[in-house]
Length: 164
Image (cartoon, rainbow, N blue to C red; front, side):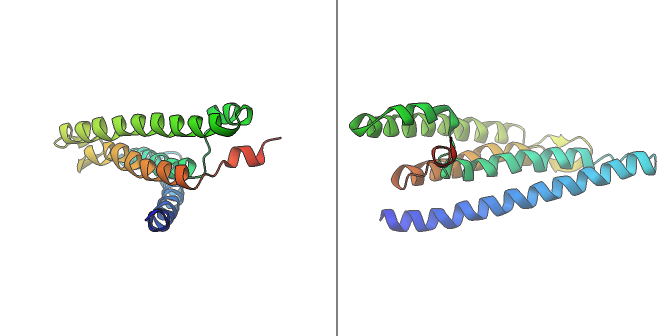
């Protein structure tokens, strides 16, 4: 069962990373477009700045999935270095539990705020609900929970491997 979960998670995390990279490229293109329209044509685009903001929000929330999967939690790096044996296993369970609890709060309140703002429109992008921006919170946090669980069952601590 765990192997099946890890196989599915691997695909999901890879897809999230690809999407995050595509969103970063899109944000760069939209930012370039904003600069061109503002400084070359002296007619700033009303929608591209909002588009950059939305793509960056989604990029960060989807990119955190890959960070959680790789165990890139720098704040707990020292604790892992100093722990051994059963204390390390307890620490690993504690860290996983705390992170999942935090992400669950983001899923819960992110979904709630997304629902509450569903009728508001984005400034500069009328006809598009601001809820699409807020939706990045519960979606990113949900997939991050999956990545945290996968990292718990198949630990990867990339920051430990590359540390001096």
